[in-house]
Amino acid sequence: MPANVTVNRRIHVLGGEVTIRLSSEETNGAFTVFEGTTPPLQGPPLHRHPDQDEWWHIVEGDFRFVVDERQIEARAGDIVFAPRGSRHTFQNIGNAPGRTITTVIPGGIDLFFQDLESAAPRGTSPDPAKLIPVFERHHLELLGPPLPKPV
Image (cartoon, rainbow, N blue to C red; front, top):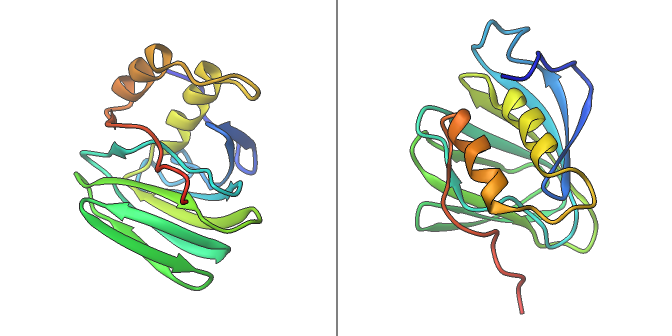
């Protein structure tokens, strides 16, 4: 298991950046808060947190979320919620980097991000064979690719 994550440390996560604002260590594992910066037309792969709720406050940009079968358009000021066990992903559909503040309950997602950065460093193409064990170690499920780029 990786060491504790330093607050305000930027972590490269599959093409985006997260900055840990409140680590799971600081909250005794209760929750993690991070700021995410997502480049245009990027976002995470489809995944599930069986044991964690997650919500995003959109600070800047336009996003498309999929939570289970629901498609949600969100822009600055909106909040999107993905309950534990839901299949979810998102994509920045704007033409500038988007910014979110995200809370995950309970904590630990910061440790996952740190581990993921080691498996898929900046400038490399993510290798599913290396990603799947990271997801499994942190009790997350990798379910599919990121959303396709809009046409």
